Length: 108
Image (cartoon, rainbow, N blue to C red):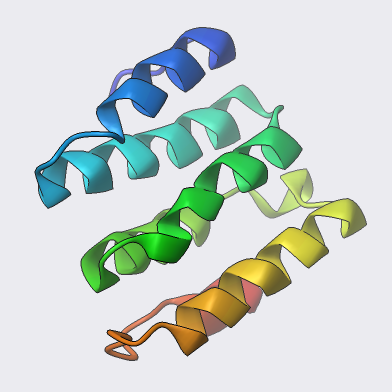
């Protein structure tokens, strides 16, 4: 994976996340999360940005949780936990929820 400056990554992956092909959206969202973690800043904005997965297909949400599980723990602050709770809520409540998530891994 190539890491970009945070602003460049945000612009690049926001556009790619609009793709009609699910695999392209998965890659864009995953790369944005990993890029943000690599840059060690912009976590609040990243959590706001990934709320887009609320209306996504199950594979996109699964990949999002997988990427979130790779965030450096030192980057998480108390202000991020309401965002995480919101992600958990709409993941669990999704009609197409397969139950194959790394939520538990992420929270441990």
